[in-house]
Length: 92
View 1 (cartoon, one colour):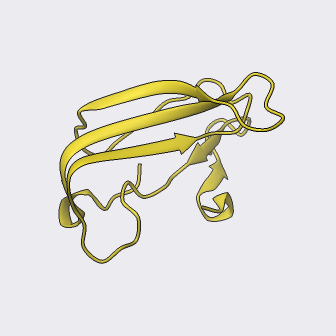
View 2 (cartoon, helix red, strand yellow):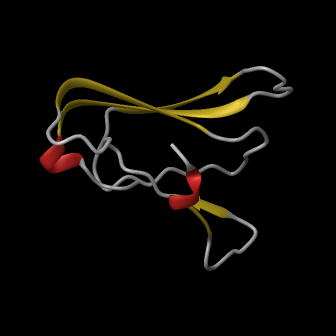
């Protein structure tokens, strides 16, 4: 997903960035028993905080390595059971 529509500078701290993306993709209707969302951030991202407008089952952190990555890219893995598009199509 291109970040130009979702990435901006923090108004209070211009040295930080804020990424706002939808929890669910823009499909019409989704119902999922076990939903997993992985967000792969740029290499070197630090001080990562996750704010969600609802409760989730788990938030995990990992590293993703691809071609020419030296230290790995941070990955945020969010898991939630019983996801419905009418309730959970919100930005985080």
